Amino acid sequence: FAPQLEVFKKEMGDKVRIVKIDVDKNQELAGKLSVKSIPTVMIYQKGELKYREAGAQPIAVLKKEIEGLLTA
Image 1 (cartoon, rainbow, N blue to C red):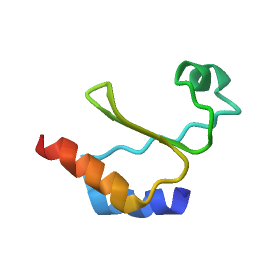
Image 2 (cartoon, one colour):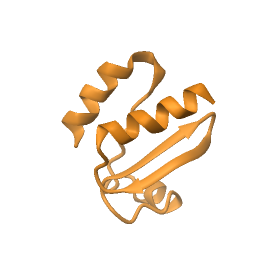
Image 3 (spheres, rainbow, N blue to C red):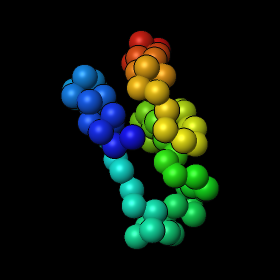
Image 4 (cartoon, rainbow, N blue to C red):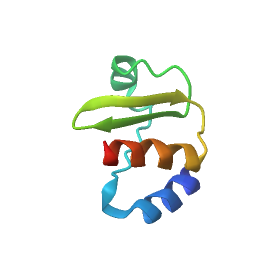
């Protein structure tokens, strides 16, 4: 999934910031975010959670979600 995210980041440019968290090294944060599956994809806008799904998501889905937020 990480290579797909890199391609996604290149396509989206400065419109997105990708943050990957190692849940083994950051167990407290993973607990606060209620991460139960790896990967868990979360999209935030201005600090507010807008999208959350467990498992690797198709890039087309992520792009659609983000584009929807950018045009809202």
